[in-house]
Image (cartoon, rainbow, N blue to C red; front, side):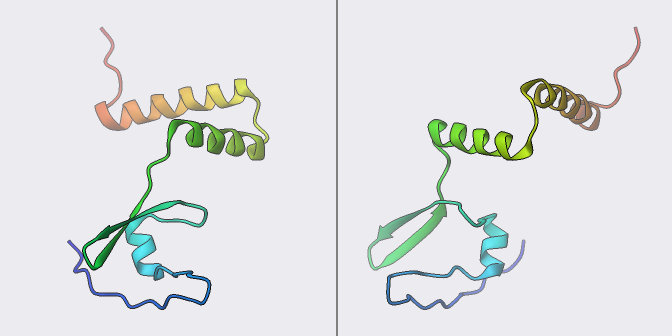
Length: 96
């Protein structure tokens, strides 16, 4: 496990905080993600916020629209991905 070091960041005039790149990468936080900030005593815990179902739907619609795929192409691609994932996880299907 990678050793976690303290990161120092400055709060800007409008209350903006930049999370250092190394920490964003470790936490899989990307531009546009939402985080939760939990005050615990004199400290703060910042954690990626899990998408609510409605937000997940909005994000999914946005991705589909920007990809230019039809619903049929998307479903076919998902079938292919599931088949590949099954092979990677369980190996090729055995003939009976």
